[in-house]
Amino acid sequence: MAGGAAIMANVEHKISLISGVHDLLPNRVGGAALQKNLEVLGDILYTQKEIDFALEMQRNNGKPELGIDGKIRPLRETLKSPGGGSTDSGDVSYNVPVVSLAATTAPKGVPWHSWSVVASSGMSIGHKGMLHAAKALGMTMVDIFKDSKLREDIKKEFDEKIGEYEYDPYLDPGPPPIDYVD
Amino acid sequence: MKKLLAILFLIISIISVQSQSPNKLKKVLLNSIEQKTDELISLSDKIWEAAEVAFREDKSAEYLIEYAEANGLVVEKGLAGMPTAFTASYGEGKPVIGIIGEFDALPGLSQTTDSHRNILKEGGAGHGCGHNLFGTASLGAAIAIKELIEEGDLKGTVKFFGTPAEEKFFGKLWMIRDGVFDDVDICMDWHPADNTEANVQPSLALVDFMVEFTGQSAHASMDPWNARSANDALELYTSGINAYREHVRPSVRMHYHIQDAGQVVNVVQIIRESGFELETLQKKDYNLSMNRLEEWLEVLLLWPTLNIKYL
Image 1: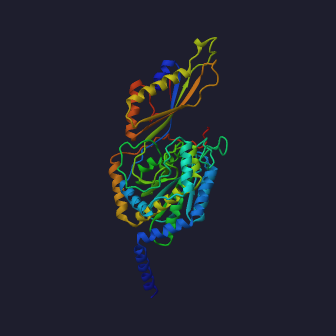
Image 2 (image 1 turned 135 degrees about the vertical axis):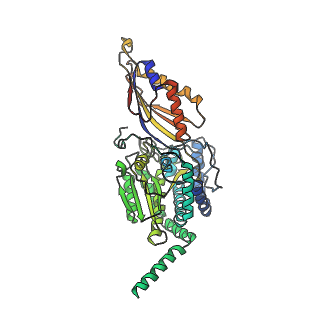
Image 3 (image 1 turned 30 degrees about the vertical axis):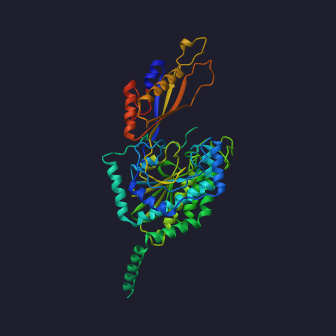
């Protein structure tokens, strides 16, 4: 397409790959183990001050005033088309089984990659989510270390999902561009 | 007698490793993390204040490394050609259980901890994806697991992966390429969010690429017939992209931004650069979309051939 545009405008063009990532391969066996530990830990609880902060932030973003969602709900079905977002953890998940958690660190529905997330990541709402995450991850690691059957089942799901797929990263053969210019 | 005692001691240690129930160990673990609450908050706040962007996370990585070493983890730094990529591990043998920690910030998002927009440092970066919490929580969990291994309650190796540049460039790709994840059996991961759940949803595959058009400059009015406008090419190209949007699956996302938009209107622009992103459900879907782009206008050869200059 770029070539077509270049021909039409009678100019030269160059396409360079920067990088790319794989989708995250979910692991339901690992997810179920995490879920049990989340249920033991229970909901993240907030003070009235934190809730007021969240409501104020939602008002300032023109978003519904939903407060903070620290509730633990049943494990969801894995959706075929869950929405947006990408991560290079996706590539890790094509190499080893990845057991993944989301933890509440910001008010419900505030724009991600925005000042709102910066603000909440530097105060108690963010801190609470961080500590909850550390606990849930740590507890699940205890299960994984102790239970060889769990490890095998996580691995089995991974192997089945990977199938014959051969991992091939979107990478130029050279070194990482650590000295890039903005 | 000494030998007998040694065997007896060995048997007792084996029994004690196996007899500690997971629930009991989890209590010890929770207690350990509780005790470190202030340290973990202070660590995450330090990374939040540093707010360093991709591959420039020198202080942030150093803060995490210092804390890992202070807690007895063994650190390997400067991995895969990236000064800020590191691992912090403890224990020996299998299983090797990994845990991922990110710590890079986003440019231009500097902000105080107020509930309204309030810039902390003009033009500065900010943790708009919560990676200050990400790296800290994961390291906290790894340290608590290390203590259980040290006590002989767990057997194997825990390995924290300090992974730079998640927001731009995707540092993990080079770590994977250079074998940093090779010995890991299972890897834990998490992400700050606006809800809490065991995440069993896929994320999208993505490719970032840059298109550069080079034309011929001339005065825009005196001799425009001698000019070849890179701007024209860019407009044609983005028109093509935007037309193509209609014919892809709803899961596909296409984004672009124009890096060099030119300075003046009375010079026909020579170079227009534009960054593009294509996101889709799985890498194989992405390949389909890219193949379609190639077929459609016959030219787009993006992968694996790079840096081709078409004349």
